[in-house]
Every structure is written in C-alpha cells, then in structure tokens.
Amino acid sequence: MRIEAVETFVAGHWLFVAVTTEDGITGCGESTYHPHPLAVQSILEDLKSEYLGADPRRPEFHYQRLMKHNSMRDAAASAAMSAMDQALWDIKGKSLQAPVWDLLGGRVRDRVRAILLVEATTEAELLSRAREAVAEGFTALKIKPFLAGWSTKPTARLLRDVTDLVMAAREAIGWDVDLAIEVHRNLTPDLAPVFAADVRAARPYFIEDPIQPFSVTSAAAVAPRIGGTVALAERNTNIWEFREFSDCHEISILRPDVGLAGGITQLKKIAAIAESRHQRIVPHNFTSPVVTACHIQLAACTVNWDVQGYVREQRAPWTDVVHAINRIERGFLQIPETPGIGVELNLDYLRTARFEPFGQKFMHGPALAMDGGLRHL
Image (cartoon, rainbow, N blue to C red; front, top):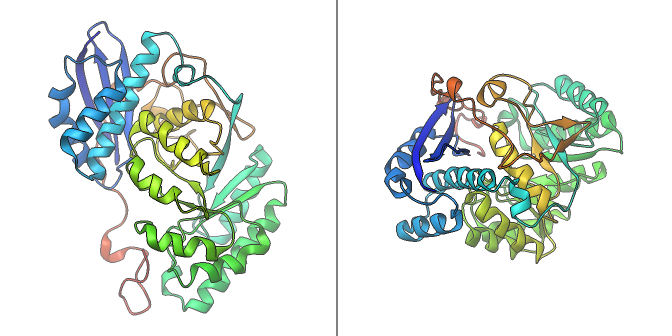
C-alpha cells in the first residue's frame, strides 16, 4: 500500500488534510495551529514529497524520521505532522477494518465523559447556558469567568468580580457537576494563588492555565502555591516538553492536543508519561469533530484519560466539515466501532471553503489594560 495523494484544505482558521492511498482508502486529520493555518498548509505542501509513495501504515516511522530530520522546535511543523499522523492512523484502521482504539490496546471504558466549554459573553448568559447544559445531562462544565473588559479593572475589583461569577456558577449548577475554571493565562505568578484561594469554596475541578504556560520553572513555582488541581500544557508540542511539565508533581492534569503535540502516535506516549506520575489527561480541544474523534479514540484505550474537552458540534461549520459529527448522549461521547478514527471529511464542502483570520485585531484585543498598554495575555 502506498500514498498516492495528499490534499490540504483551510476552512475558517482550521487546516484539514486528506491522504489517499493507491487502492482508494482516504484518511483524514486536522491541525490545531489555529493562528496561522496557512503556514501549516505551506509546510504540508513542502512535506508532500516525503509522504507520496510511502507506506501509510507506518505512522511512528514517518513521524520520527521527519521530526528527527528537521530537528526544529516548531509549532507549525509539529501541527503539520500531527495532522498527517492522524490521517495515517485513520488509514491503518480502515485497512485493518478496526477502530484505532482497538489497535492501541483495546477499550478501557465504554463511553467518554465530556466537559462542555460554556461559551458566553455576559454573566447572565454564562449562568443560563450552564444551567441548560446540566439539564441536558452534562456532568462536567468549564467556564471562562474573565469576561470582556476584565483587563481594564483594578486588580482588587477584577479578582472580586471573577470570584463572584465562579461562585454564582457553582450555585447555579449545584454540587453534582464538576466545574473547571479556564483562567486563559490572564494572571501572574503572584496573583494566581490569591485567585485560587478566593475560589476554593467552589471546589474547582481544575484551574487551567493560570499563568503564561511557556516556563516550566514558573509553573513549578506556582502550582504548589495554588493548592488545588492545576491543568497546563495545551500549547506544548513534544514528549520532552510534556515530560518536563510532568516532572512537576503539583501539576495534576496535562492538556495535550492531538492536532499540535504529535498526533495519535505521540499523545499515547504523553499519556503514559503522565500515568507514571499519577497525572490525568484532559486534552485541549476547541476545534472540529476531527480532533474530537481522534481524542475519543485515545480516550477509549487510555486509562488516565479523564474527561474530553467538548465544544458543541451541532452547528455550522462543523456539520459541513464532516459527513456526521461525533455522537453525544447525556454528556457522554460515544465510542465508535467503525474502522479508523470514526469520522469522514466532507471534501465537497472543504474544496469550496475559505480562509478566515483568527481573532480580533491586535490593537482592539481584550488584553488592553487601564493605561492602554498590555496587561496579561
């Protein structure tokens, strides 16, 4: 079996890849380097010659040879190889008529608990949507309490307002639902422990990205001072970076992304590193049903996979990107028995899709402080 074609598509600010073999099997993957998908597309176009004519059933080999040949600590390149790795596993599963989870050791659970990201721009909207999610059957929610305008507030007012919102969310959903707090890197090492103490009464499921995530030294210093469950590393790209974060035992949860940190091949290893240190995996996920499907495959066969990050898929463009979205019932994602990763790209739609830049213009972004400078990012 040989790879005959590699096609790339950018829809919005998401990058998809379709890999087709000479006997007509097509595998799909996705990059989650959302700020610059065109950069990933250019890298994949450059790497095509490395894949064309190769055996797609060797994802470990292909990842290792390209990563070690280039030896660049490069998020865009890692995202490109991650998308290809997903597609190769999809092909491997289809060629063997088995779901990917079956090739990676078999199921350790019958369904995957989802943690829904509650998207809202106002306090009233956040509380209303949180209640709706609980009524639907979700048993884990994640909120972003740093709402618009947070960066223009004096520190004391900011901490009070955000804490009040967290406590209101806990009261709204009750105590039978796990509540995670996405700080979104908006605090500094001195303020993160203060905030954690303020919200401790809400019993957070975890506090995510309290500070900028790039320094292992800073994370290691802050995590024990928070005194609760800390989740980090959604922007890490390889097993060495994750191993360094995992060495900080006060970090309870690692957040690899299958579209950035090396695909299915590497995430299975990252989960094993975490398991050896009694850490859980809650993967980063705010993208399309393709990444979610790959994470479901890993969750099915990985014992320390905790909950699956989930953004509602029952809407455009996700209902256009794939022929059928992932099945979710009462807050639990269903594990497919179909060969491969379990979803199929809608190539007719993707061939007409267009690129749209990610986020707001820099000068009008949400991180402008009271003096018009940058506060936190």
